[in-house]
Figure 1 (cartoon, rainbow, N blue to C red):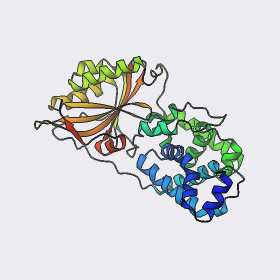
Figure 2 (figure 1 turned 180 degrees about the vertical axis):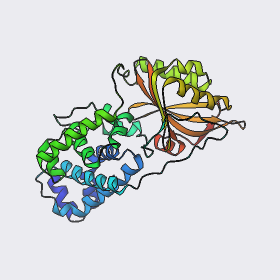
Figure 3 (figure 1 turned 90 degrees about the horizontal axis):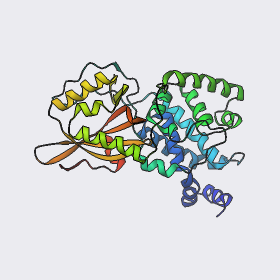
Length: 336
């Protein structure tokens, strides 16, 4: 059925027609909301608000832009509303029993950061990008990129994502944001400067190996063996000198191989041993972490996401166990 016919039916209250109209765009809209908000849960809320607004406003859709662009307009404004509301997840205190961590290098600001399941990214992979897009799709969903976006003012985030990630023209972004082209270009210039300032420098770092390649499998396999055997020396051999470790929603952040090694040693010296179950998050290798217990059951305690460079680990991000169901990972499993 043609889009015009579906729109006419949806305007008349046909929910099935509305779903058929919007279904092809849902995953890319969710990823858009995730980039802007940095939280999987907040992105899902923004997506649902977008659909509700679109359903209620469909009578005002005049067709001057495509339905996809119209949906992006609504989603962007719902995300801007969410950013301005500042109702974010609060930071959590250290809650690992029996482990005394080293003094953190600093306390992070982006404690609401959450991972995005790799299986959902695959569903969004076919979404079209405009000719002016500046980022590869995988880079634009990486944890480092999404974290850096959260440090920018909301309007700059919207402009940068719409222009440099999705490739909309300046005139289209001006229409989406109900602004002028000059204002959009000015915001984009400031956003690019802010992103260069806040995103960890890639200078001196090799690109990560391709997803699923033998090179990625090799470093991931070494990490699993080191972590499951609590071999700190083998783990340290995998880390870059400037390796970065964070653990939202706890604000603790560690920069540098020595202090990350001390953190891991504190974890393992407390007698904690883990089983790791592979997954993917944000286009990066990830693992559900399961704590072995004397009763023969390993209990899910979190999700680790690796940022790779060449044959080394450049960053390690630990999320709490509330995210495991999003990745199809169980709460517990038999110990190996």
